[in-house]
Length: 523
Ligand code: ME8
Image 1: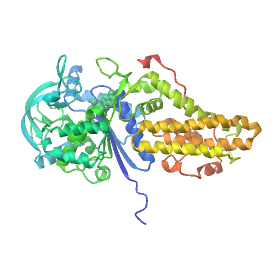
Image 2 (image 1 turned 30 degrees about the horizontal axis):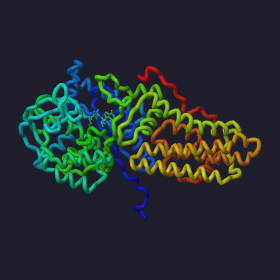
Image 3 (image 1 turned 180 degrees about the vertical axis):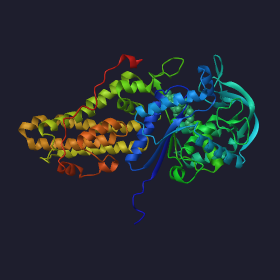
Image 4 (image 1 turned 90 degrees about the vertical axis):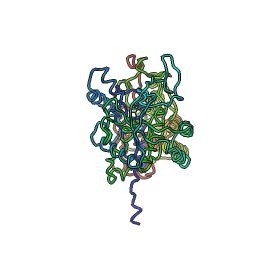
């Protein structure tokens, strides 16, 4: 019927917007890469994807960093936001929108949201006295603080300072039950489970009203009708997810993509996304995002990265040294998604060599160069098939299906692990079938083996595209494989069509070089 024409279903995914008070580090790269892989996967699945990332440029941390460096806050924001945009370009991030919170439209959107919360009766003026961590840009209750060497610290171990000023408050306490009801009715709203439990405990413990404006500095979004007040940076930061869709215009992009399917963020900012944000949205009468996923932290050889220990690693330098796809593959394969994980240059090299260069790369290179050399690049003919061919193609189909199932559920490392099972099956097959030996003794059988491998390599390359888009794309180019979405995996006729087109495989350039550890990048 007229309604059955495949109308692509929208999918809106966002990363956190990063504080540009310094250059991007590997944690920022990790989040961007994970979100990008998910966005690419959903596009392959036929979804109409919108993917947003950006920089969060207001707040006291920016003000203080600019003061320390002796530059204007805007100059600091412009320079550092540029590095984040450069990182996204370098890492092959396929975002549709890079939002900066200094943009005038974002200010207007945030003021519109504020006005709705005011209209709902949820904002009131009072005096705030309490603890604030500039590093976390967060207020903390006395009971949450821990005693550190130099005084009180936030639960994240960051310094807190006593703050006392007149501010606007948001009636967060009013939303305690509504939030708990929402978590109960939507068990997947907060993932993974550990984060969900943490948030449940926090909200069950009672919510205080939230101070949502500041008067001691003016770098931020102005509170409408309240001279001297700028909004608390998290009010404006969270609103980026709406302003990127042209809110308060609720037609166009907003109508198409809101509510978001996934806010992908790190574990340290789940409270802002799973408590404050839904409460603001409820107050403003706006639908809630479908899911908040708090991924784990990337640690440098098991250590937390910090400016003071000087162990912050520049992801662009790492990508230059080892290749973008080696870095992407390593981060998504070696870190169990949702948990913390460790990284080191050695670990990247070891993983990329084992899985990409020696396994998948070698498989593609051996097969394609053999065809280029011995069949003059023509696609192998049907030949004499054997049960082993069907068994291999079934193992590969099983691996690619397992990849898709795990990936759709954000089991990114399990997905990649499943994919490798398909690669191993191919390498076993090629060793047992030994097509090079069949060239003289049984060319008919050789054709069947090579044709089976071409099919398997294409499926594996399409499947791994979201993780390593550039190199998997090159393998598919070498194979003449044009369609690259999930539907292409089920297209049984492509091989015959390609063969009939007269396509020839050219002598291939290796796509996955063997990596060596580089001294400079290892530190
Ligand atoms: O939190 N490993 O910005 P941010 C993995 N502006 N992820 C990490 C990480 C690490 N070592 N360090 C940080 C902010 N992240 C706010 C967000 S959103 C409306 C506003 C993650 O630059 C962190 O968890 O401190 C967050 O998701 C993102 O990087 C940006 O952190």
